[in-house]
Amino acid sequence: MGRSRRVSSVAYLKLLMSLMLFVGISEGSSLDYERWKVLAVNLEKVSGDSYPPTLSKLQDMEAEGYLVVLSASKTKGIAEVAVSSKALEDLTKMQDDGLLTFDLLLNSLGKILDSEERDAGENLPRVLATFTSYMTFNHMSFYLECLQAQYPQRIRVDRPGRSFENRTIYRVRMTNNITNTVQKKVVFVDGGIHAREWVSPAAAFYVIETLIANTALTENIEWQIMPMLNPDGYDYTWSNDRLWLKNRSKSPSSTCVGVDLNRNFGFQWGGLGTSSSPCSSIYKGASAFSEPESRALRNAMLPLKGKVKAYITFHSYGQYILYPWGYSTQVQHPLTATMDTAAKAMAAQIKNTTLAVYSVGNSAAVYYPAAGASDDWAANAMNITHSYTIELRDKGTYGFILPESKILPTVRDAWEAVKLLATLV
Ligand code: 0X9
Ligand code: ZN
Image (cartoon, rainbow, N blue to C red; front, top):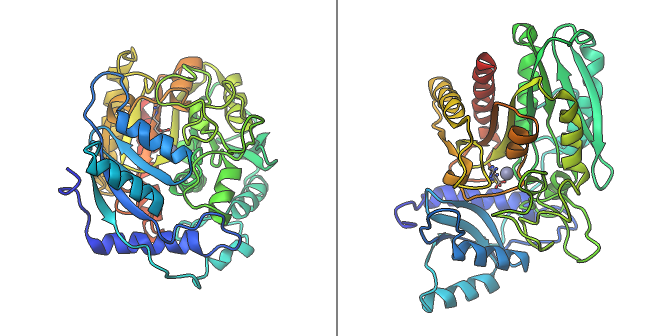
């Protein structure tokens, strides 16, 4: 299967260059991916809720710090994995022993691009959001700090929480006549839960920018947007490890850092697709809502119970529009038909505008079951009819390292989807 999906070597060379550019150049980078390769590991086909043993094994190895699971798709039947030489050795041995099979997607990362410079805009924060380069967290903060003063009739920016390392977590509220929101429905959007998925906060910022220019869309709806839920993790992907996923909280019981915020929400917390090990990239945290970042989202949303008609959380990558329940393939959400129809309408809207193809489905069926995620919590605790995780571009050519030239087309996908959804609520 991996063979038939093999992507052109040119594409992977580009991925390689991006990876090196982002990972290799930062001073004090603690993880050096120079000798790493990328594999497509075949996962056993499984049914029901059971978790494929190969994926569990890969996640255990990931917890030990010598490989990184980049994606795992049930429909594709493979996991894309970045491997150190040690991990490659072990996986090769396992392949020789008939325990698994893999294909090489990206061979030599080489010693290149050490001298490349990152976008110099980092030191020059602007009030404008940019979609031709990725924004640093400082840039985002500066943008958000300046926003309300520019549109005082239509925008409020508040701060529902602070991250573990004390960075501000912002919320932008947008509607015409912001002082009179009593009767309005709320559409809630967030980005940046997973640190390495850089196009996700970009999409949330694009929603803000586009709404600024479209007063008609803020007439009857109050939009609430939390564009960067994991500022510590995001910052860490710029400074130390481009493939970091979790937040940066320290656990008293381990030297490993970080909780997967999308396993830390208080619905079915600790179920399938989560881990109790602080070293795992799917670590669920010490308890539901143990993390200040997931609490920030909860605290922002809870007072809006009954008013929030739709919740969209941006992730990447894969081009999927996913709906609950994500914690189990065995339990169907009662509003599956409604969400499936709306998700298909969003995918059609994207197809008709940007031409990108997004697949639609139940999270647990399309991916693997993953409990304690924000979409399930929103659907359950907030009783929201429309709750979606949108996995933005691409389909794996560049994955998380989406080139800057693809930011704009990707955030347009995101905008077309939420715009369509707003017509259905
Ligand atoms: O696993 C996740 O948290 C999401 N995929 S990602 O590759 N961006 O990490 C998917 C979450 C889907 N929703 C639920 N499982 N509830
Ligand atoms: Zn994600």
